[in-house]
Amino acid sequence: FKSPFIIDKTIKLDLESAYFVDMGFNLTAPNLEIRGTSFDITPNYLNSSAIFINADNITVDNIEAICETPYNNDFIFMDIMNSNNANLSNIVVTYSFFAPIIGNFSLSNYNYIIRLVNSNYSSIKNNTILAYIPLKSVNYNVFEFPSIDTDLIAVVAAQNSNFMNLSDNNIQVSAVTMRSLSYPTMDTIIIVKSDNCFISNNTISVNDLNANGSNYLYALDMYELSNMTVFNNTISMNTNGGVADINGSGAAYPIQITGPIGSMFIHNNTLCII
Image: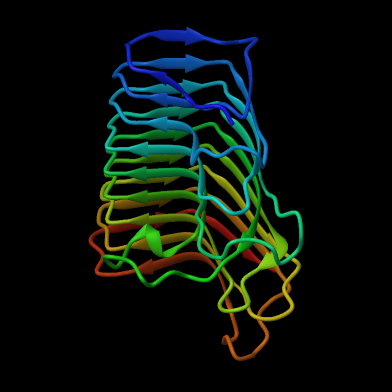
């Protein structure tokens, strides 16, 4: 077990040749810049995030990471809390869910790649995310609804984070065989109560070829927001799930919108479901 580096002074770090194994960063000073490092997160890692951001105007650029996430702990690769103007670019992440024995994994822990809460004006651009994750039941025992906290699985989860720009990313999600038996659900992008966001030019692929019953897949899942632009994205979903059983027939939605919703512009997207 290694504690994360805590960086609480404004600095620009070029870590081109640095390689960190089971060690993360807590970035708590404004105007920080970190570029060019690599992370290797194994199932022995006990912290809840690899990069935790809690300050304004932080840039993370040109990062590579391989994460084999601990199976019985929350793990958010990049966790952004109460931080405005975060800039995340040119990041390549492979996020794999690990359990030593099939069926031996927690049904209540969170697995996110990027989480934003109360963080406005973020820019998430030109990143590649490969995720191999399970499907888990939705948690309705939360303090408020709607909330990202209902969904235990997501690539990008944003709550109360206005003016987010999510553009030019390549996101590929594949479901692993491990999953909850009741309402197995996977969100790729979930956005809740976050206004004036811009989602464009992303390529999103969602695959679940392990389903033996119903499954619930959502590529872009939006709740109670306004002035949203969803433009020129390519979203494809491939699943063999969707049979009628005790959990319902399942779902595979490229875009789901739950109101009340203000103005929304959805244009020139390519949506494909197989």
